[in-house]
Length: 464
View 1 (cartoon, rainbow, N blue to C red):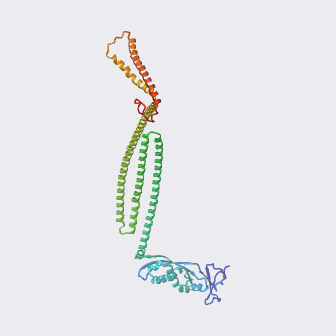
View 2 (view 1 turned 180 degrees about the vertical axis):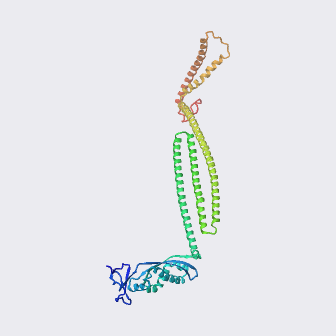
View 3 (view 1 turned 90 degrees about the vertical axis):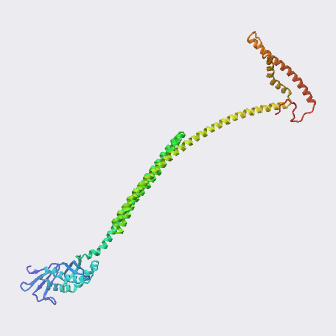
């Protein structure tokens, strides 16, 4: 309708000229519903109840005399109750667009007053307290103006004298120091992990090479075991060389660990020392780097010297092992020759001993036979032993004689036969004589008592 007015949810309708005014006011306040306004007799105006924002920028002086540039934001609105709406209507109805500026001036005065009673440290650390004190300090005035303050926020505090920066400098330096320390620790831990990984890798490679060398040594040893003493000695020498190479690999691994320690840990210590002593950081860093480089060069030089020494010792050990192996082979061959000669000598001695034992047995048998009183046999043996001498004596008779052989070979044969026949004739005569003598002795022996055992019956019997 033409004269029907309806306020928005965030507005209050003010109707003046009516006799039905609210208590202590001369106008009606309508919110949340519409009403009829009599033309000419009544007049209707709208008052906004929306939230407003006022920016406060003010230069304040603290209790220490430090000048600060403070920027704050105040959020406020006209109260929803009739008293607040009436107070605000009387003061701001015609100046609604300038409410932010007017309220901001009131807040600025309270802000200067409260900051003047605080130190810079309290303002920085207790901003909520500052905002609450500004809000509490302006509560009475805002209530008279019909304004409700929702919040006050301190947005920025600037210091042209550098006091705040000086306060923050130790903390900033401490934080920066902690950050550098944390970064150094992180780098140190990462370096340590890299060292551990490198050491494990080197150890794995070393173990692999050792196992491979061991397998190769076992293969070579198995091949050499099937060959003669020479290849066996060569295989042992090769195994010794591999062992020395393994020791050299372990020394190289230790050298790698020392190099990592000198190139990583010492610079990290130097960096930590630089952090602790800010004044002498550059000097100590240069000194630490110089010492680290010198240590690294010295370590490399010592490692090269040790490597040469190890190689020299390995070659000398290889030659010594080879000489020992050759000496051992010569010793084995000499022992084998001595053993063979010993066996040969033992065989010859055994043969001689066997022949001697056989001859001794024959002699013992003859002695046993003779010991039984077989005088005929003794005499026969003596005749047989004397027969060559008899023949020789017969031949001596014609020695030096001039004989003429008419019928050649047959004549020589007849002469020799004659000599032998003479020897046989002499032998028969002697044998008969010996037989007669033996018979007589036997008869006399039968008549005489038996001689005691062990006595000799004839002077001609040989002693056993």
